[in-house]
Length: 96
Image (tube, rainbow, N blue to C red):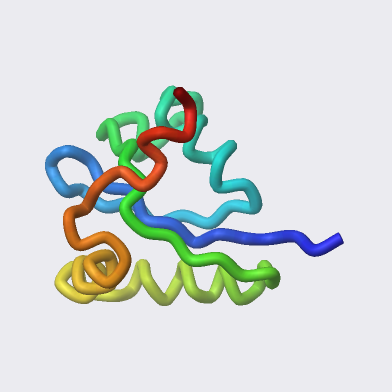
């Protein structure tokens, strides 16, 4: 059975960015949106999924997460715009 891994970027209403990696994007977004995880995203109310990438290899996902975290903000914003020019919440209707 093939497993998928996701590198994702969240944004707050004030454009604070968070980059993470997970093996279940839907579960992880539920956790972020309901503030079930202590830490940065809960403290700063970062809930909007604005970008994600998918791979079937965890080592590639972790390496990409580290790469993106080291980018300057301008480069991160340009990457997000390639998928989501309006910075809409890509997971907005997942839990209706």
